[in-house]
Length: 249
Image 1 (cartoon, helix red, strand yellow):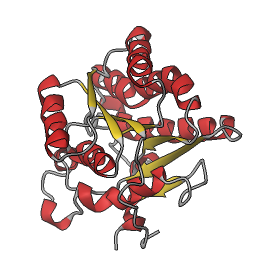
Image 2 (tube, rainbow, N blue to C red):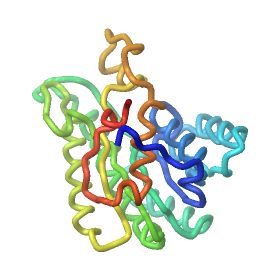
Image 3 (cartoon, rainbow, N blue to C red):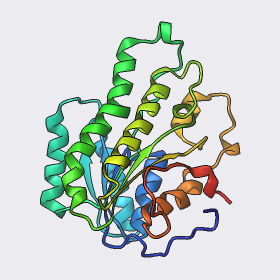
């Protein structure tokens, strides 16, 4: 996997929805997929930031993207159904859904954890993923080679004190990935999860304020893993829990 190198046009004509696409790893995913030929649908709650990433993709000469201002804290199923309806109207199908958006919440012992924060983290990290996947599934089934990618975490594979709602939500993400992979084993839809690991992002800085960010890989360093997961020939399996660090040379 360390030696994987995507072809320049490996994602040509693919339609890929990326959540949390305005900063950090999400923005890098969007830019990288667009660079390799994909039509990227950017999803985030901040319209101004969406427009900025949209303009960067267009200025680079990549395929024209689209964007959807959506607040994943909203638990109304109708919002997610409308997302799928817009994509169907504009594109007719979906080749990949990348669940990148996430809410760190706060680091706290369970007995003192703020209830409102707990419910918000679960909504963004679990419920929104379920709803978006549910309503986009008919669009993914129209693809000859579809992929659903969930973002996991080390604390979602081995629990750690004080990581509270975030860790529990990532355990749920892994479970959702496994259930879907088993359900869709005979379909043309691969379902996997990826753990980015410690990366130079704002979320990481919030969790570890005393850490030197220059000692960490950048989001760009992780992109071979994200490209590999979209390549059905290189990555034909489903139900895998991948570590992005395994791709860093």
